[in-house]
Image (cartoon, rainbow, N blue to C red):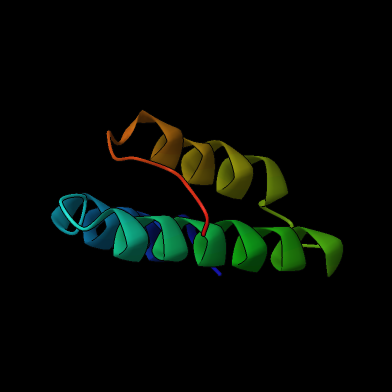
Length: 65
């Protein structure tokens, strides 16, 4: 996974922020993907994590049913 892949997912989350459930699901999926990459020894782990955490700056309601 590259930082550009994370940015594409962030763009998707931003585009869907009016649908809280969809945006939250995409954010959870992004964080899981990045964590897996890091656990698998990604050479760019710090960059991936820093970029993925930018999802927290996207304004939508985070809740679970």
